[in-house]
Image 1 (cartoon, rainbow, N blue to C red):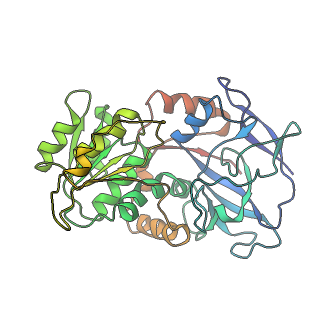
Image 2 (cartoon, helix red, strand yellow; image 1 turned 30 degrees about the vertical axis):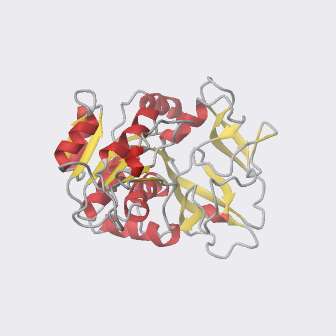
Length: 351
């Protein structure tokens, strides 16, 4: 079948919104006709990376309706509503690196195991999670990456508990999800750090108790002062080397003896290849530094997040601050790159 998608054709060139060809699904594949897709900063990393194979389809968080299922697929059927995500339902070690979907563009195979910047998605059944048909068609898409990544890091990776102190660097879609989850879990203080006062004000409305503009003050010193010596958990939702290096000294120190642990630094944002951290922060304070790679249990957590939205606990509607058509994807990417998007932007697909 034919469909339309945004295609990354070459490094440095605008995305082409063009026709793609989808074969019939393999036994373990599903086709989902999308209602919406989130626009994630990770795709900018792909587009700006000369090593990215082309042609490539992009995007990894979407919501839609199942239209075709492979012969071995049993957990969804045609007509089911579902989230398309990048985190497999069955855990795998390391980053997902499945086979190409089989989609072609101008008779060339398209790289990548999943995409959502396209009207119809052909992907592995492992990346398709059923949701109630009553779930919002527009808001549900961001559960597939922004929410699971940020909220999951707080809830599952760090295991934050009431009264724990938290600092979060970067309050885009992922960081705001982390802020909201920290608030839901009754952490205090919840310190949001960014370079943009508008984004920091947004973070306050979404659950942050304190904010730090890192362009005006030393964020490490500010967090230590606000938390009385360092937080229990510090999260980097950006992924730059400077932010990679800031989160560990933001945490409180422990000391010698059993169970006298210091704080935990959690890396969420996609990092570069290196960073420098003082080893005495580990040794002298028994601090920990962890990565968090899509820390979610999709089939259990996605319905939970959507239920929390219905109960007014998770502000998915407030998180989405801009909406685009697929035809406007290059403008959306430019807006995201230039820092004009607060929260999360989405693509909406017309019927």
